[in-house]
Image 1 (tube, rainbow, N blue to C red):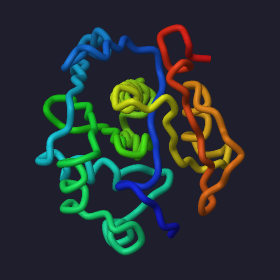
Image 2 (cartoon, rainbow, N blue to C red):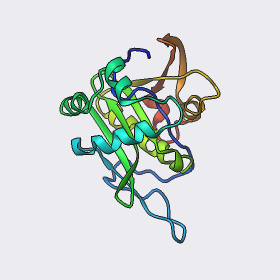
Image 3 (tube, one colour):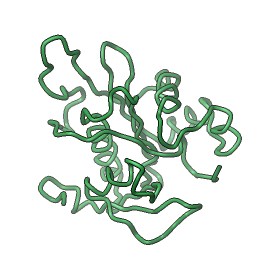
Length: 193
C-alpha cells in the first residue's frame, strides 16, 4: 500500500443528475419513486465514524481492510476523530437512517480526502452530491484551488467521475496516484465544464 496523508485513502462515488443546495443542512436527493426510500444528507459527527468506515470497507474499487488503513496510512477511528476535531469535515448520505455514502475533506490543506458510496447505491448521484458539499466547504475555508489523489487508470470509475465534474489532471503523480485539482471559479454555479 502507498503512504497517504489523509484518512480513508481512495475515492469512489456515483454520478447522476440531482438537486443540490449547499445552504441547506438537509437536502432531498430527488423525489423518490413509489416504494423508494428518501435520501437525506447531513454533516458528519464523530459518532458516525464506525458507519462511515463500514461504507469505505464495502467499496469494490480501491479496496482496503481496517488493518491496511491502520498499518499503511495510520488511519484509525481515533485518528479520524482527532482530525475531525480540528481540520477535517465530512458529510454523509442516509437512507432509512442507514449511512450509505460519505465524503470528507481537509480544511487545512484543501484536500478532498474521500468519497465512498455503498456499491448497491452507486449511480444514484450520491457521490456527486457529497463531493459538492465537501468542495463548497473547502472553498469556504479560503482555498482558491482544492486537490485530490485519484487512481489514473481509466478503467477505475473514480477517474471519469472527477473529470466529468470538472477536476483537472495536473500531470503530477504521487505514489502512483494522479494529483487532480479544481479551481473555485470552475466549481461555481455555471462554471462546471
